[in-house]
Image (tube, rainbow, N blue to C red):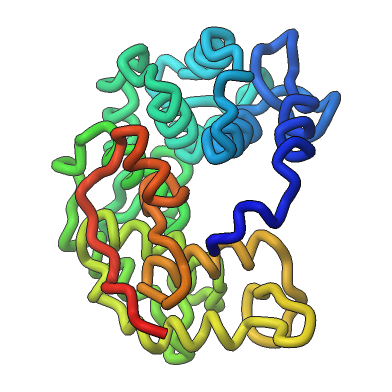
Length: 279
């Protein structure tokens, strides 16, 4: 939203570093929590955004991430062993941001993602699991970073993604589910990466996202009338950026970070957002 100075930079960096798990070599979600690959990526993203990556022990973080890849190619989230395609994407994303992607067993990772592809073109959390829009994003985005979008059944998948739009204009994550603002990112990002963002009605989706705002106190909810939260506010704004909403900076749909940061790191992939509209 162009207001990076709205939060105190030093306090933010200080909190991130306080979440470091020195024994594991990664970050927890909160001080004294066990290291987890998700919190570790969040820490990396914050430090990259704040131009503070020099505070990171990159070698130890890379070792922690790589230790979580399983023989199948998927990643566990932490030492307790839960596996999920989300964690695979997180590993690929983090290693890419750190410039250490070459240390990943790429073929194993791609092979596992291919095992998760379903008849409808979508992807699930694990091999054999139901297609879900958020899991589609993590698989497609990981393949984009690995330059392996050739394995995606793009026509079938983009049809399935476009079918996620409901009469309200909002998007759901699976058939027969309610619309939810967060899917404005999960669905749109995949369509954007595959250059099919015009396959949904952008005007109706924009109206749906805006209708979920709290106009008195700010923020965006999962759907109109519900309580706002940071999660849905983030993904609502992210969706609006991909839709070309005026006043927002361009978002990179692969990394879910400002496109200018990704471009500055030399990681920009070929994708097309909708043209940004004037005020």
